[in-house]
Length: 454
Image (tube, rainbow, N blue to C red; front, side, top):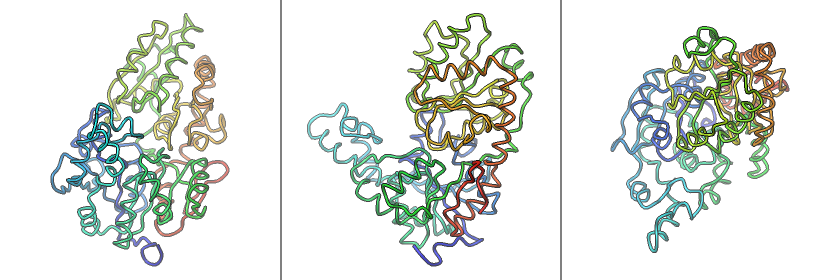
């Protein structure tokens, strides 16, 4: 796109659209309703971006698809004051979804599980179009006009919703941008056909991971100047360093205990929680007399599998708050009480959880998932230690070594906080986003990892 559509006027509003078919597909596994989302939910990529845009003086509107409404509904996100539009999916999507075993199936087998004959054959074909039917084009276009949106920002570009938004944006003369938050595969054959065209029609792509940036430039021939490296933002005013002693007293932990912490969605394979449990078992075995504690905060689709892993008698000292915590005052004691944050993920886009922990003054021991190297590019100098993905023994060795050396933990924790202050503050990220939306893409982060201002 060229011309005025590529520039973001000061009076414009950014329409932000999350990935996936329906917003409740994300909310239900973590025990939240759409009302909870509107009234209480904060943090993460989504609300971090809304905060960052606001710091740059840019208004935004959040647009979500949900089967909980039958006509477009405009509400206000209570914590931020940002308008939220809830749009019903198309009738065709409702009908198609009813015929699928799994609307997010990656292959024919999972799409047709439990189905036979004509029903299985129909599901095998319908899964390719289902993601495209979830976004109602006319209602979305009306919302964009009504809210006077002059830019569209999609959470993921490897998603059917991004393809639909690109078409809508072209029709309305509104530029479309997208970020990378971990989605790097197409679910359907139709996506493989259209994605090369739509990804090159986007006004710009925001990708913090260098590996992902190389991937899309090689696969889609996207010019490097249209790919901008911007970190996910964090409002540091909401993440001050806390009182460790008070937090431990609140949680019933001794002041001399050795404490590690993790928080996030309970997705066993993606988040590497099986690796974490194996690593913790090794730490416990090697330190039979130590007062060890592993704090887990989060819920998700794989809670039962995690619960089964935790029955291992070797594993001790695990305290699991099985809840997706929206109230920061409930989460903070767990972070404040810890000596070190552990991040065993196999796959990420650019995770927010470890940034939150680093902001609280915790050192990071992380698997080498996408985005981790950019998070702590200088390793220990930035407050973190990186181990190979899937390496439970290596994770245990590095995590155990830090738990054994509290002075080292504090030293790395101070560096972690400094790193977050320099590179992830909402105001800095907001300025960069404003630069991209104003038609100045292609900014890169410095060799130290600190993002430059647009």
